[in-house]
Length: 55
Length: 175
Image 1 (cartoon, helix red, strand yellow):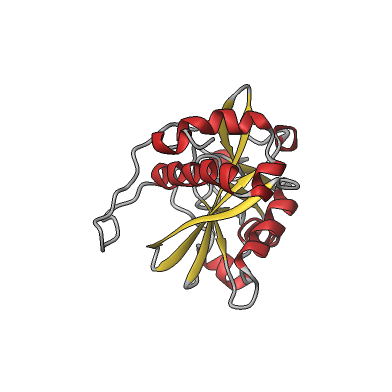
Image 2 (image 1 turned 135 degrees about the vertical axis):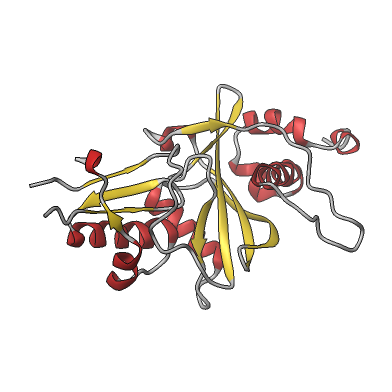
């Protein structure tokens, strides 16, 4: 089963990867680009399954 | 194994799946540069508004300056030009001028002229478009480059030339 996730930001940025990768990249993007701390729980609650064509 | 991929796609129209910028006071940043005599808009969000969360303690201008330096590079001017009520918050607008060579591979977009969002004498405009906020910010910069020695000193003369078009006619005779 493919557990890859996708997270995207209102600014157009997006990431596809494993849950740990998505959490790390999203946390970095949110804090560095938007000065916005985001927890793992917040990120995983918003992330969606990666679409099949995102490989 | 699938490698992680991350990218910024200004054309992305999918709903965001990252927690949105929140808080009672937020910053909206317009990063502009001058290239071949024209003003261009840039930033990590392309033409979309670049929103920053502002905490209760840090000075908004210091937050914007720090983020700009980290994400893009050293700014030439960082100035707050307006505020408005939106997104269930007070939005502070910041205009940031950077040198063209700092942008590197970051995408840029042309800046178009817009009519201002006009208010009544004692009430705020009913609607304010993103491009109207930028238009107001550039008119503010056109005033600063004439009135503020600190801004005039750091902006190359080419900026004054291009900003002449943003100055109301009666002001131009004061140049």
